[in-house]
Image (cartoon, rainbow, N blue to C red):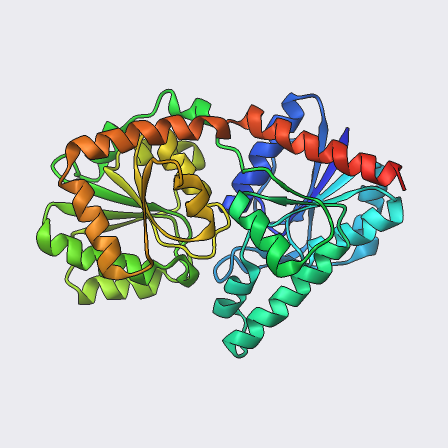
Length: 383
């Protein structure tokens, strides 16, 4: 099968979407399928893999988690027609997503779309119009986009139900979680991270992801103020970078926590298992993530999570592996303090977390995505 994936973001950018695309591509190619990527060009970055086609883009990753590919259809058309894809898989509902629709319709092939982000929530943070209006516009854009798709992929059951309820789509919606490369956790080295940052005697709370306003990091930082007041040995490590970093650094200085909050910046994805395993707890406050892939990555290291009640975390932690709490500073801080004070409970949750992460292996999730592709192909052939 020849698959053409269209995405507004890819390496060297780092995000859950990038990780998802890269690992699904890895799984599909290991299963002897061709996967061609149509993605943005980043200055001074050279791909080491085949079948990646780059096009001019405005790099907006310092503000939002995408690059704006200049949608010149004539520029991209020879590549897509040369690929002759059996199926097109879009990762976004705009820009490259629009081109994916155009080519799918022109070539008469199925269009699969993965709903990665709560676009209505995301728009409230980044669109410079009234928040309520921005949300409604985003919702209408996504609704119209889904009507043009053959099949829609949701990363969790809660997101599938949200799509069916709020967007009222009449197209099939299947749950396929993003994969985690569990093989990288076999040789994790948490001691290296603890020694590098001088954390041997401390309790480490870990966040991994973009430092962006919609990730709920104000709530996390305010909760940490309460936590460290009761447990001075606690440390907060923020792994990642983004447009909200300076704001957070300013808040940390005002709170007098410069020696207790660690900003690592972006780290190579292959080192994430080391960072995850070095933590006592993983903390997650985003209300906009549809899955929260970093939750599963932490759980794969046997680290329990404390997360706010939101669609992605609810599905991942529903059977254990951590605690779900309301998106309130007091409740979040208290949940963390409870686990830090209870080594036995924390160990039990860590064991649950490790077990619950296993179904997210690349091979397992790839097989589920292939089933979606086959159903989409059957739909188009049956017309």
